Image (cartoon, rainbow, N blue to C red; front, top):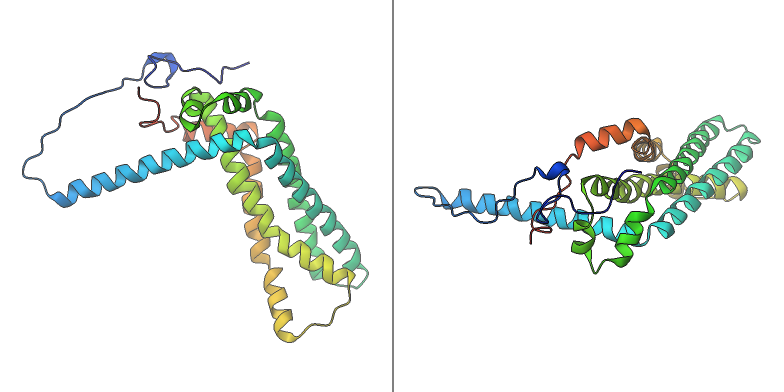
Length: 242
């Protein structure tokens, strides 16, 4: 099993084969420069540090509650798949092919999401969870992971929080509207009907499908290769410098 937890290197930075060099102190003297350039550089640096902290924090808290998060998302995906299948049956009895086609897509995407979440949870290492539970905070957790561990922690946190969760939330109103109004024969005004049409539009289905399928892809071997190539060195910045 590939190592996930443990700092490689001199304790100042995480790196494979101890080839990362950390420059602890530098003095820079600038003459004749513009103050605006310095302020701009400082602003970019602050944003980079904030993003690194946010990513590390998201990975830490996801690791702490990963079991609950995956359970909630899988339950949501399963309910959407069941609701969409029920709506397909109801509207097939009413000769409404457009809605049947829509709900077929929703059912398929929800099933893909449920399967992707099952695979993701099965592949989430217990080592990361245990490290988060034993860590005093974000810094201890993030610096206790090697590069591979950080790549995995980030992948699961981002695909769950941005991919699966956002995608399923886009599909939720489509499924809810079709299921409720397919079962109950409710008369609505023209304004309400227009609103309901927007709540079950192809735009929402397309966006939901994009997020769900993208998140699912990253939990395949090809998706992992893409991710590990793109995120070769997860950010540490000042977090892991002693």
